[in-house]
Length: 118
Image 1 (cartoon, rainbow, N blue to C red):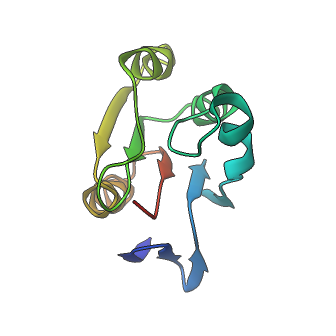
Image 2 (image 1 turned 30 degrees about the vertical axis):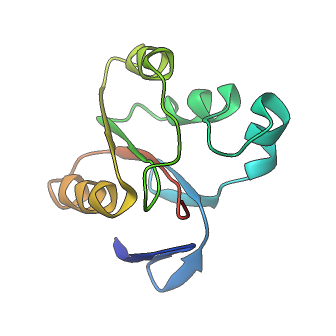
């Protein structure tokens, strides 16, 4: 469960992270350099990250765009994620974290990418 979201920090099960990717209930620190290499910024979702989010047969994929919404999620990104046959939710990270918790409590398999800064 996500306990706290603040600028630059996400607390999950008592551990602090920056940006995170959650796949099949496993939490990974997001490697921003992947998006930086592909787009020159970490404010985009890299192709590798999109492919990761589709793994593990999720019921839902949730994207947190940051505290101020700076992570750009394109229509093409959403279409690629929807190829997994799941609903995709895109919200500011605090609201996205609430969605992750809500769906986890409901017993759903949730994959997520949560951007913790701008």
